[in-house]
Length: 130
Figure 1 (cartoon, rainbow, N blue to C red):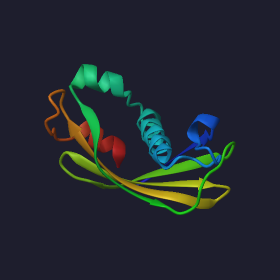
Figure 2: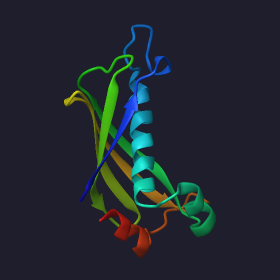
Figure 3: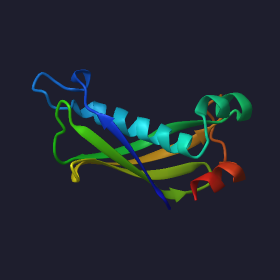
Figure 4: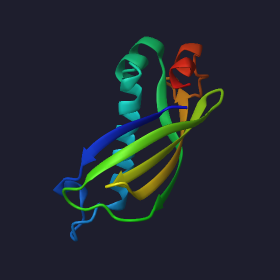
């Protein structure tokens, strides 16, 4: 499956008192990259909710912190869909700076309706991701 890449600058607000990215903020960079992946495929999440009663929620995250990012670094996040099943997807996201791997994130995303009940991915959505 294809890999989508997005880049984000590390701002002061992303760091701790030592100027290193606070660990939870790597998840924010990963979330932005997943949203950018959807947008690159023409999927606007607010429209998906309004028109199709479909949302994506995180079910599971496995994050491996390898090296720190620092203030002013430019982080590149690559996002690859590894697996698609009935109502879920598994994505691998690698965060890098200057081609050095900083963080690896494996995330399971579940498709749900507005009542937060699992909902099978539609054929159209499934086709966007393959």
